Image: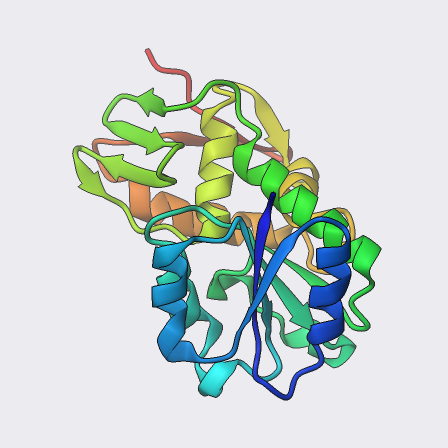
Length: 224
């Protein structure tokens, strides 16, 4: 049975959402005490995390919460937001998707399934190796020449997608749809920004992994 953790303040209206998820077979827990987040996730890590972005527990930013969530497992983290927050939504904080109020249960479940699919849908398990670059799918960790590389959730998913399809050209629209969703409000510039950040972390004068295909998109370089 899939376990869902909802991070929210005590006065936020997530009880009905939790009950609706439970009725559909999910095991849900609501965590409102930031001091208990790390403890709860260590004791029994959830499969998916839902986090309210308007009023995070004790005013802690999402990025800080994600640090408790991400070190041991690669988890889909879905933001629960109001419509007014769409313009200011920042995926660099570590969230992988979002649902706009009134948080319809059918949409929430669809986002949960999509998050799990993106996290787990890769041929084979274990390691993806390209020279000095190693992607540990089981641990959701990336290392270069033996050194762990800290990546955001989207950077990791982008790298995993490209590296698992070595030589395949992905258009910007394709990457945007695969990793951000068809109804994402940002433009394809989002892909370019994430590619640039990813390159800055895994490439140097002796390592080049991602090639730009002019006017089309990107591909993972085929090893010589």
